[in-house]
Image (cartoon, rainbow, N blue to C red):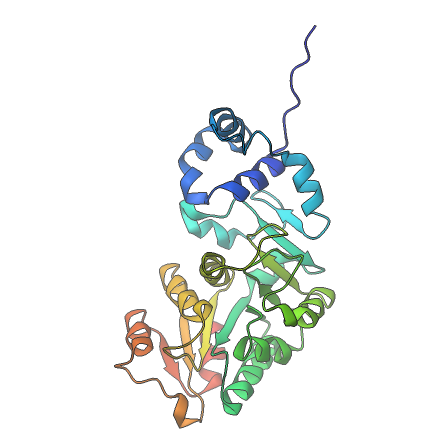
Length: 285
């Protein structure tokens, strides 16, 4: 008497699919078959043997030593991610002591230049503090400059959205800040399983994730040479119908000409420019 093979769990199937495929590439079949049957179909049809040599349950168990894998239907799943449609992540990895659903429900992303002026640093800290006092969660990547200043200025649990596996940090020497986020009621979030390094692709995906997890986006001192995440996050926010605010600082060297690349982008996405932090706090309430 033969024994039927043991079927893997939906969680393990989703983690395996996410490791090998982009969500939009499998969305149609996923909706028809479900993650377990789709994984089995893809494995059976794989001529390379890469999928058949992969052990989803074992890989998931190992990865969850570093971070938890949250999937649609879990209490911690933020419904804001459903706005991605076919590009909705198959799951997200989280690390920390916070509640992702609660934190994301009131999250405001604060991001911008990696080498800001002193007034930009103060603006980011003040913005984070004011948003936190108004009941919002500050979200950012852990990039240098504005992102870091916002994390430090919040004074409350925050979200850190990373372009790598949560067993490490990007940038690498921001590990202490990451630990502060995850041990003080906040969460680190990534669509990438532990062991995944940062790349141009992961940075771009993370920009969209940051926008999706936030109710609005605040840009401080963006520029033509700004890092990948801020401007791509602004574009993603607009496509997801999230408002984008630009907080202009007192340093004239950081003014954004409307004719510059960044100025044209901000105009195209209808970003709201202001010099008054109170305007932004009032707009997002």
